[in-house]
Length: 284
Image (cartoon, rainbow, N blue to C red; front, side, top):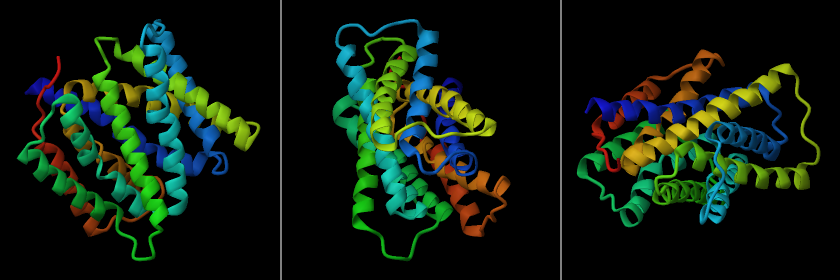
């Protein structure tokens, strides 16, 4: 069991790092160049991992890598940006909190992982916890924004499950690097076509881009795919609920935001959901 909880800790690096990007992006990076922001996040991370893996795609990976790169990085990053423009952050976060359901739902037919009652109870706790953490918008919610956010969730969940199904004993660093490079190249082409030249940033902006590429992308996605290879997908989805929790906590610590009693209760529920998920190794 100790090894399994160690895997939970490794997997948790991903949502915590992703949650930290909210504060970094808001304070240090330009808001009017989302495609370049995504490209400068994915492509350098992929090249870094490729330099460490020192392995080129072979056989079917010449088409699998572009497919996974578009799902996990290209299409996902663009859809998340569009959803952020159309939806209040509380609604967008609440939709993404359904990731345990989408991951487990896809893992059942594609990976043979059947959800358990314990996982279902943990998912219910976790979703309620996220709603308490991020709040709930009382205004009019654009249907298009909800559809785009739900599509982003499905795309990312499908990409993660397919990456696990197609792993075929290929080293994780290699498969992650190929996906990031393929997705990063597609994003770069889109950025040039839509946004033109890369944005100009100061030294702090360069450091922010580097940190997001190395920590919140290269390291985070290696940890995320490690979790999917060795833990049930539904458990990985529950661990992913640490993403909005991290964003809120950093907003309190760095941005001077206040933390309400309901948010504290939500954080407790999310942690309880993860603890109740009872990790179990599914693949060696």
